[in-house]
Every structure is written in structure tokens, then in C-alpha cells.
Length: 508
Image 1 (cartoon, one colour):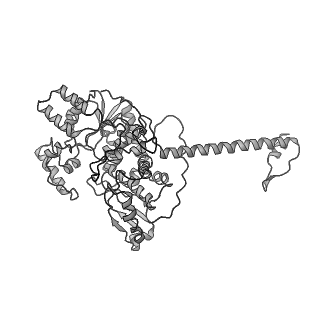
Image 2 (spheres, helix red, strand yellow):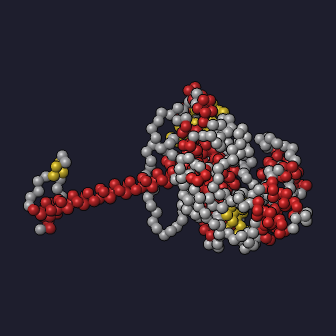
């Protein structure tokens, strides 16, 4: 009987019609086979739709879960990893040409530039070549794009918006005598500039090479869909490599195992001090060294700088000693974990003595991982900065001592993650208070009260950007507060900004 049943099941299909079956038993078996087949197909269809919905929501909607970083998803929860979501369908369009870009500056300046260039390529219907990273700046980092970012994810996650290729077709190479147009676009430009001034150039030059990309797209006034594409690239498409994400998460877990932690972006580094002309707290010999360095780099245009005037205007990073006083005045307790997110502090451990005395649990990635743990990242400043980015984005509180590119982009990521607390220091006001306290005019209690009052409304809460017409350098930076991407409704009014009241767990 079992042999006959098995023989009946192995019926062949011809032209979508089943061959005649003999007897009642096989008919019942055929009915069961049909029911089983329908159930399997339905399950596959439902699962496919679910995965597609998840993939689309991942790309377009911010994660506002406190304490979860979108920079890395390498959290080991003991569950098997889900398969990668299916690729989104590629956008079908006729390309107007190839855009090649060379990013300039440090990691976070280049990160913002990549977001801008993807947006420009999408708006002008161009094919983007994977961006080239700066190898000639002060840091002399030889890292390529794929050494820092997951290039496959970058290309695939944006395929429904813009075509991205790893390299130009051979026919446009120098070997074949092709000379692309090399130019820097105008800084802080809106979409009309690219549409009216840049797009016509592709009719004559099929390849254009932007050799500078810093701040080449306006903060404000762009169509909402372009602003949100900038966010999508920044928050979803620019994932660090698994090696960087994995080591960054290892640092995060090492810190979290010992309790909450505060990430202090202490931008008291040689390049910053030389570039800005800030020498407060330096010896005469150190000030001379910084000046010589400034003259050695021709693209740092300002040479003669009044350090005292620059500091009084709030344009200098806080010294480690000043940062220590400010943290104490803000009420950060002595046993708080302080993670220093920076490169080599100018003056090394000598300048960190006051900070370590006030906060003994002050650590750096070098002390947590040791030379062996960082050996693959040595001499690659951008990769080291990426580690600091991961740790800073995941911290309970983030405090930058200077509003450079890392400070701004980390702040924007923390807003995206649910308005996690970022204390934006009022350096101009702090300099006055610090000087009054240190010369004995302002006692500690009054100094501490004044510092706290000055920063009550500066914790990265929901807000619109400050817009200053014709002065884009002085207005709020888009990537520090991309509020268009944090809205519940298309209007983006004050009531529609998402607000997650995540109370800081760092004791103050």
C-alpha cells in the first residue's frame, strides 16, 4: 500500500495538467499535496513581503531606541543572525555622465562630503565613482574608501537612488588619453547652482572630477527629499568596515561593563592648535613649534594669529586643564568613566595630569586595547578616528571641547539615535568664567552655578537650525542637526520633531 501511495505522489506535470490518477487514495494524496504547496508558497510570499518592509524602513526611518547605535549592529544577543535583506530594485535612469570626487580633510569632513556628493549625483542623474579619500593632508593617512567604509553596502544600499561604480570605465582613463574636467564646486551651493552651472558641463565633458568637496552643498534651502537623502547616506549607507565596527563595539562593551561613561572629545591636538593658532597653556617653545608647523602647510592660509583674541572669541579648543574644571563644575562625579576620544594630546600625559587627578577613571582606546589591539590601525588616523566615532555615538553623554567636524557629526548621530545627551559647550562664555575663577575673582560655588546655568539648554534637544543669510559658516551645520530627518510629519514644525526624553545615566 505504501509503495502504491509513493508511486501516486510522483506524478509528472504536463502543460499545467496533472496526469490522470487512479483510485481514491491518490486523489486524497493529491489534495494534501496541493494544500501543502499553497501553504509553502503563502509562507514564502509573506516572509518576502516582511523582509522588504523591514529593508525599506531601515533605509528611511531613524532608529530612536536609546542606547542603540546604528554605527554598528555587532551586538551578540545569542540569536542567529538574520540573512541580509534583499537588494532594492535599481533605479532606472539615463546617466548624464560620471562624477569623480576627491574628498579633502579628516574623516568626518570627508564623511559629510561623501553624503553631499551622493546627493548631487542623484539630483543631476549622474553615475558616481566611489569617492577617493585624502592622502595628502596633515595626517598623511593612506587609507582608501574600502579600508574605512563597507563599500559593497554603500553601493547596494543606494542602488535605488544612484548608480555607484568602483572605478571609471577604461575608455575614460588617462591611458587612453582622456582628460576629465577637474574643478572644485563653489562652497555652500544650492541645487540651482548644480543644475544650471554644473550639469551643462557634462554635455561637453562626460567625466568631471571635483578635487575639493568640503562644504560644497548648502545647509538650508534645499528640497526636503535631498536633505533626507543626505541623512540616508550618513546614517544608513556609510557603515564602517566589519573590522572597525567590531573593534569599536569591543571598546563600547568594555566601557559599558563597568557602568555608564562620558565621551570627551578633547581636541587638544597638534594639528588643531597649529591651524587655529591657539597656544593658551603652551610653553614658549611649544608655541614656536606650532607656528612653524602652520607655516609649513601652504593650505593653512592664516599664518599670523593672535591667540588671546582667538580664545576670547571662543574659537579655541579647551585645554585639558580647562576641560577638567568644566566637567567638575557641571557636576560630573569623580568616579565617572571618562573616555578621551581624540588622537595624541599635545603635551602628552603631562597635559592630562589635572584631568586624571579629577577623574581617575579616565581612559583612552590605547589604554583599553594596548598596542597589540590597535596594531592594524596604527598610522591610519582616519581609522582611529572611526573607532572614536563609534564609542562617542554610543556613550551616555558626549562633550566636545571644540566644534569641529567630528563634534558636529557625532552630535547629529546622537540626535538621530533619540536626542542622546550632547553638551554643547559655550566656549566664549566659559573662557570668561574660567579666567575669573582662576584669577581668584569668582569663587568655586559661583563659578559652578554659572557654568551649569549657561548649559541648561545646550544638551542636544530638538530644535531647528539657526539660519544666517549669506553667512553659512556662522549658521548651524546641517549634519549637526538634520532636523528634516527627525520629523513625524513633512512640515517639520516644532511639534513634529521627535523627542525622546532619555535621561542621562551619568551622575551629575
